[in-house]
Length: 194
Image 1 (cartoon, rainbow, N blue to C red):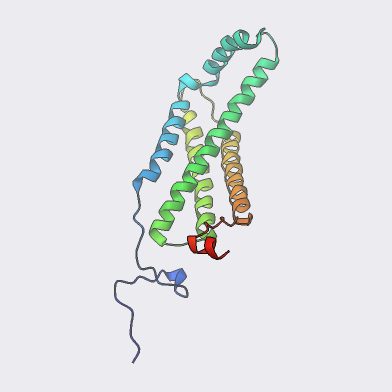
Image 2 (tube, rainbow, N blue to C red):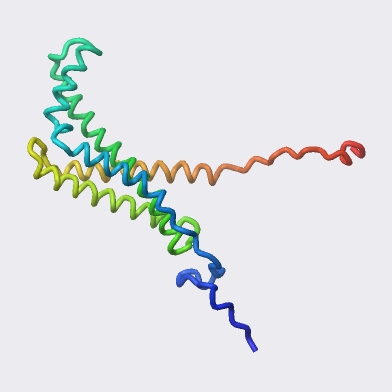
């Protein structure tokens, strides 16, 4: 007569051919704190204080002190480039923070292992970065002195995609690197008989 597994053993639907999941990892809300801080930074940067007119004025005041003449037409183009680079970098960082938080959350709830988890977390992070970028631009359409642009949403999403691709490249390199054997310590017996 076959023996059934104990009732407390949970079989994840997609992993029934593998091993049973004996315990769930606890979800720690602490992994979402960096995401919330990143979202708070984006909300602050979406205020009129951080609008293009104000940052252009700050940039025009700082430029002559650091590099000399501020009358160059190059200054306006550099200011625009730095603002877009800020979008790209900020949302790329948010994408990585979301990937880490989703990775932990998905693992906690589904108790999955391996690259499927990483792919799911990456897809969720890029999707949520697109959502946050879209909401941010929508919000900016109502803020005086701010301009809403779908191009910025695409820049934000590309930042998340590139930062996650860099994460994957670093991870692949670490996984493909040959493991270095640690030198063993010679025991006293080996020293005597060697």
